Amino acid sequence: MKRTVITTWYISLAISDFLFCAFLPLNIFYMITSHWPFGLVLCKLSSSALFLNMYSSVFLLVLISADRCLMISFPVWSHNHRTVRRAFGVVILMWLLSALLTLPSLIFRQTTVHDSVTQCYMNYENKSRHKAVALTRFICGFLIPFLMIVFCCSVLGVKLRNLTIKSTKPYKVMVALILSFFFCWVPYHTFVLLELDLNRHSLEVLQTGLKVGATLASANSFISPVLYVFIGNDFKQTLKRSLTSRIEEAMAEDFRTGGLNHSKSRSMEII
Image (cartoon, rainbow, N blue to C red; front, side, top):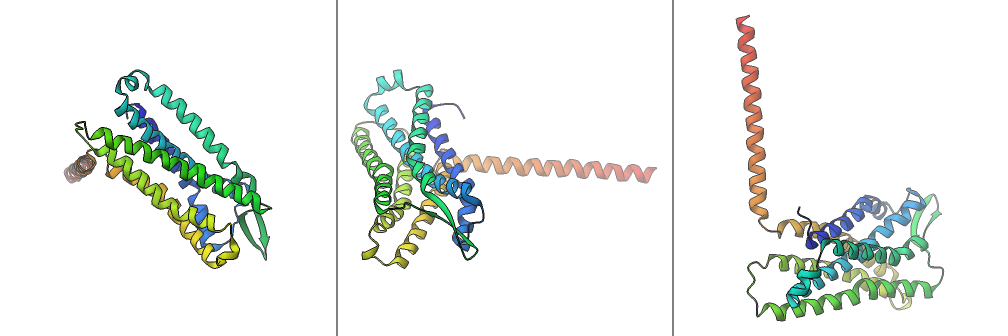
């Protein structure tokens, strides 16, 4: 792909999803067996991958929304100052901020053994730390970014009414990514906040809700790449051409191989 500002955002999103999916098999195994045999380091890393993906994804969605908003609202300024180098620098800062906010998972994630079964869990040691981490994740990783995204999308909606846009597919991709992130992460944050007050809620309901929420949150890393592909420009035509060319190449190879074998067999008969 040609290096542009928008491809810089989307490639960063893809890297975020890939890093999380790399640890996903370990989380699936633990969810099925309730046993963690992979050690303390992977316990911390697998949990951190989820939150690193959460922060980086929502921050990148904010950047994409703000970038689109600036392009429409200040086209001349954007043309003069919107460069790939600056976008790359912003992405680096975004990753550093995401890593900083992910630190609690690295610090408080621990393993413990009960009756030969190892568990990987969050050990906050006191309720105040638990509450602080949960509220920070909700406010910094969900509430504030989404308010910024809604603001940018509102400005875009007003500006686009007075403009003639040839293609709306880039905006459809952005809206689809935002909606998928919203519906995938709302259940998780809801049950995490409910967990802060165990006296008012059933422990079994919270445990089930957290599993469902974590599953939906994990699904976001699968849904995003699918949205990139299927809502992207000319995907169907590209896929059709790709499959057709592959089939033609395979058939041509078979034909050449078959012709070669036939020639060999005729030569053997002559000999």
